[in-house]
Image 1: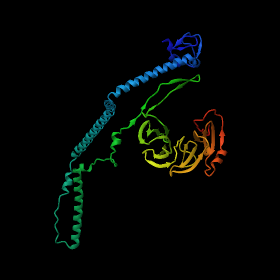
Image 2: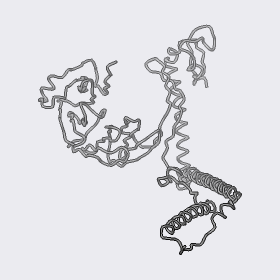
Image 3: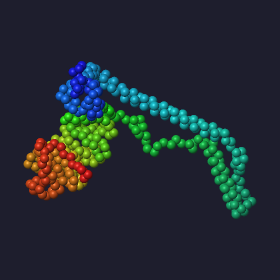
Image 4: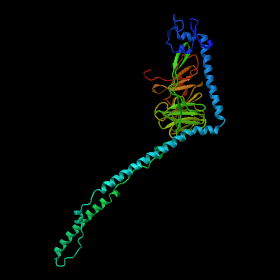
Length: 410
């Protein structure tokens, strides 16, 4: 339809895709006698309307397809679930058969090796001279020997017996050489789960197509390289740990992801904000408490009773070791997360929307349209005195909703 096309400055029309892939300034693709500025062309009100209508149509088709899918799948939920698990069951069966074949192949390989050693050993004949030298000479006491000669005779006889015993043991060992072979196994018991494999929940990774958006008359190319379809209803907060694991807070659950795979799922009622403390611990707010838990197990480490509903802005906070900061309405509290004890509480007269740590241990606060920089390291100072000494930054016309401190390089 003609109404679905982009109108060029010359009055002719063309498809949207013919425009979006052009450079910033290009020769008119219809009349070819003038230069078109892509941003100005797409900023024309009619063209903005056309592109928006096209987007609505496309998104509606996606929604329609998804609705058809859910209607179809919901008709027989049990069978849908059964089919969804059929792939992983087949993979488990294939893995079992694969390992059975590998074990059988290696079993017959070892048996063949044993048979070859046995055959090679059978070809070796026992030296008949050695057998003749090992003939038994019955012991007889020499009655006519004097005591000293008799002792010498007995010593020589014992030495001959010892030699023959050693040689006979050697020959017997050669005949029963198979008993000296053994099957070596790992010192530790076989971890069958590591050997066979584990069932893990894996998110869907998608390579997104590049999209163009028009913002304030300028076109920006946006590319999503990876997306995590985690399937949760609503993500309240997420944060990366220091060793690149991902923690996600979703209503009553905390999810731990590693290498884009969900590793753990912890029940954590009414959790909205979280922060990573180190590679072992993380903190979440929960009904007026701060729960410090182990990342790998979800086990509680310390429970901090705050007396109010707490919200985090960044995490591992401020100052030196063992410090954690929480924000609730007008109040910032600093805690020792190992003991659960409160170190300092700082209150402003108006609501603090967000805070961040800046260089040298200072705290940056956003209060309406103002930004305050406060030194909270003086824990014995009067809050009013701290407020009076704080540095105030002005320049915003509306409320500040986000803060990010820059490093020394700016």
